[in-house]
Length: 177
Image (cartoon, rainbow, N blue to C red; front, side, top):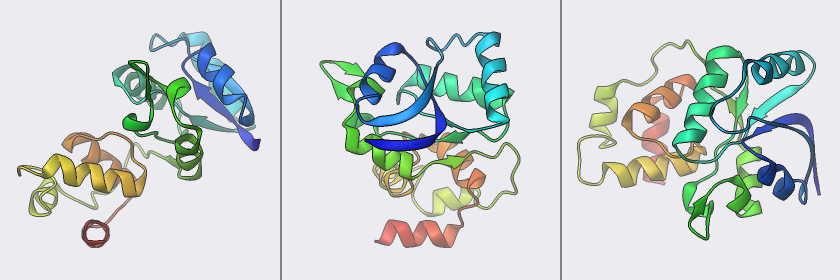
């Protein structure tokens, strides 16, 4: 059992039920992507005394939850699970994810900064073949995997790389490994 001294924000009861078998932590349930003001206010209060980590499904509702939380609460930590390891019986989610993938995500959590100085531009992404080429999606997935960024399209990759202040040189290095 892995003990975490933080609060994990998850989508539902099935996530808590599954994760509780492997992780000793406090959990907050969002009850899906329609997060109530009560839940947001509670997370704000908890964040004053504990680290809060967002661990949601690698799908559109999960992204919506992250976006809503980030718009309302500064300094949340995020960890991303890869979708291909989070599918079971036709469902996608944390409760369907291989536990080792969740542990890897928890080992690579980070804060997405709202304001940042651009460390990489869209033209850099184009030069690195991360956009505009036949194999761009494959290269984005490779880079995302190495940086534990979760699923990324070009726009999301741009935002996350800049949020983490990842340089063009570092990206080249990672793509050439």
